Amino acid sequence: MIETQTLPDIRIDTVVESRLPSFDPNHLKFGRQFTDHMFSAEYRDGQWTNLRIMPYGPLKMSPATSALHYGQSIFEGLKAHKAPDGTPLIFRPEENARRLNASAVRMKMPKFPEALFLKGLTKLVQLEKGWIPQGEDYSLYLRPFMFATDEFLGVKPSETYRFLILASPAGSYYTKPVRVKVETHYTRAASGGTGSAKAAGNYAGSLYPAALGQQDGFDQLIWTDGQEHKYIEESGTMNIAFIIDGTLVTPALTDSILPGVTRKSVLKIARQWGLPVEERKISVAELVDAYKSGRLQDAFGLGTAATLIQIESITYNGEEFVLPELPSREISNRLANYLRRLKRGLEEDTFNWLLRI
Image 1 (cartoon, rainbow, N blue to C red):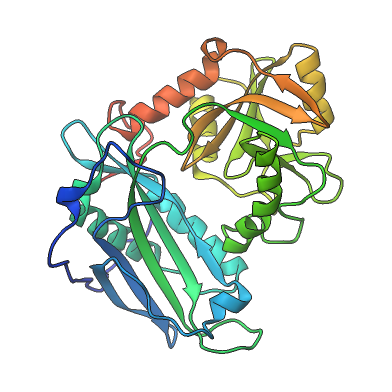
Image 2: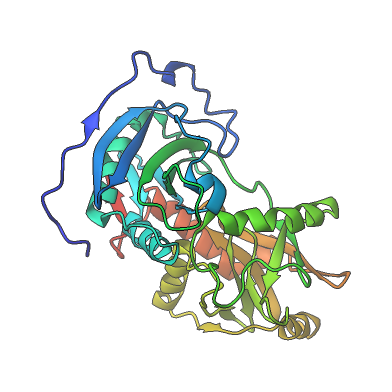
């Protein structure tokens, strides 16, 4: 539980005229549209101050802003959905608050108080609830992020920071099962690095190899370990899991794998249902052998943006392994359906994961 405490007030400055009347939920592209307002806080002299919800718009920044030069920038991603009665529901926001602070520690940035994270998030979603689109594949995507703001060209931790939360009505991140390729040259993260932090630079370094894969017709990469390219780690914007001989198998967390909230949730659900679950090292060789012997029954990605997206095929060293047709994938279909319904208040919240606004 996050400790309750007396929290500072949040000033709310609203727009003169909302853009909501012109909002068309039928033509949404992920991360392209934003609501009227955003939450903002500033860190100076060891304290988070100037807490406010303000009109969404450009930020005034110096060209010498530290984050632009030295990469002290972290972020989170979570979603709000509407229950049948119109109540906004946010899925496990306390997990995102904790992970943001774990990233902050690794990137030598100040923590943002978890209770304040939830208060700012709640106030913003309350104000912007009209922007939450109805429908199974729709949500209000929430993007908390923090970056260094010192105006200083020196390699050292910044002394000032900015924290914001943006809200973006969104449709599906993926519209169909994905084709992936096992990456054997480029590295997303190495042991001892920042792979377990949700740091902006991790994603910057992945863009070029991902683009090379897309040129060859792949939607995503499966990243392997940085030392030998022997063990599977995660897939692009997602954690990854497999069904091998009826067991849900996923790579054990290390300091080069992001600890996903969706991953954590799916593992808990699967165990609650009595499904066998293994968190361990998975070699590429084991995966290929499982496929060729008919024991690889399913593969899927797990992430906030994608939720649970099934993998159509896996290519390794030019050889494509096509997975079973979707109707036969009993476990991933059941998990995906349960998560969709739970997030929209259509399943009993037995885990107490939903924050009702």
